[in-house]
Length: 391
Ligand SMILES: Cc1cc2nc3c(=O)[nH]c(=O)nc-3n(C[C@H](O)[C@H](O)[C@H](O)COP(=O)(O)OP(=O)(O)OC[C@H]3O[C@@H](n4cnc5c(N)ncnc54)[C@H](O)[C@@H]3O)c2cc1C
Image 1: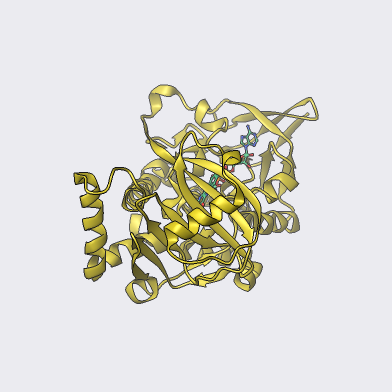
Image 2: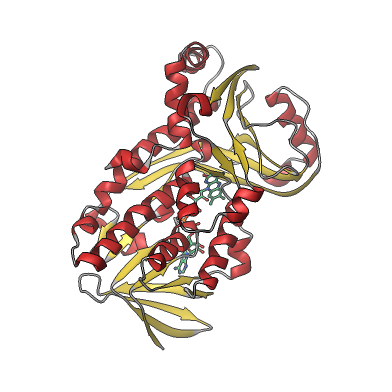
C-alpha cells in the first residue's frame, strides 16, 4: 500500500515524537513509523533527567502538564570523591534547574498528544529502505503485518536511534565516525524505595563509581560501575544494595528491585547528519555516556533545529536553514560529547589509587571544592546551555 505525507519520520522515541508535534503546531503533516509496539516504547526504561531547555520546549508544545505535576525539580547535585562531597548549586550558579521525569513518561505524554492532534503513528512498522533521497520526493519502504508498504514524503526525519536504518543509509564517504568504548559499564536498578537523599549524588570510590538518582518520591534509580564482562545474574539484590551503600557512604532505604540491567558506556558520533532530504537526529547520529544525563536532551535539541529548518522551508520556500542543519547541531553535539566524557572521567575508577592518572582525577575534584568558576562550568553544562548559544 502507498501512503504519503509531508514529513516521514522513522522512530517514535523522544526525537521522532517531538519532531511530529513541532511540525503539527506549524501546520505541517507527518507520519511516524515505529517498529516496536506502543506498549513496548511506553515502558522502555532509559533516561530520566530533563534540562530546562527540554522542559521549556515541551511547555511550548503543551505536553508538560503531567511532567510539572509529577516531575521532581532539582536545584543542584552532589559530586563526591572517596567520601568527601561537593554540592553544585545550579540555582545559584546558573539560575536554572533540572527536572527528574522518566523517559517512558515523556514518551507516554508525547504519544498521547500525537493521538489527540491526529498525528499518524504506525506501530510495528519496520522501515527497511529509504530511496530517492536526492529528489524532492524521497520514499520510505516499510513492512507491517508481513505486508510491504511505502511512504512518499518531502523530507525524512531519521529518528530511529543507534541501531536504526537512517545512519546506515548515509553514504559511507559522507561522514567521519568518532567513538570511544569505555572499559566499564553501568549496572542500573529501579527499586520501590523512597529516596533518602534529595538530589543526585555522583560518587567516585576506590571500588568504582556509584550514582544515587531517583524517578519519583517512591522509586529510586541507582547505578554501579561494573566491568564490561560482568553478568547481572552474578550479583544478588543484597550484594547490589551492599555495594551501593559502600560506595555512596550511607545507608539506603532498600525496597524491591523491579528492573535491573547492565548498559555499556560509549561515546559515538558522526560529523554529518544529513544527505539529500534525509536528516538524522538524536541517537541515530550520536551516543553519549549517561554520566552527563544528556542523551534525551541532545536528541530534543537536534529536533529543535530540524523543525526550525523544515518550518522555514515550507513558510519561505528556502532550504538555507536545512542546508546548515548539521553545522548547527554539531556545535552542541561536540560540547555535550566533551561534557559527558569529562563527567565520566571525573567520576569513574580507571586506575589504581596513587597513580599519576588517579592523582589528576583527585586534583580535579579538589579544585571543584575550592573554585566556584569550576563549579559553574559544570553547572551550566549540566542544566544545558541555552539553544541560542549555538547560533
Ligand atoms: C539502555 C539505555 C539507557 C539509557 N540511559 C540514559 C540515562 O540514564 N540518561 C540519559 O540522558 N540518556 C540515557 N540513554 C539515552 C537516551 O535514552 C537516548 O539518548 C534517547 O532515547 C534518544 O532518543 P531518540 O528518539 O533519538 O532514540 P530512541 O529513543 O532510541 O528512539 C528510536 C526509535 O526508533 C525505533 N526504530 C529503530 N529502527 C527502526 C526502524 N527500522 N523502523 C522503525 N522504527 C525504528 C526504535 O524502536 C525506537 O523507538 C539511555 C539509552 C539506553 C539505550
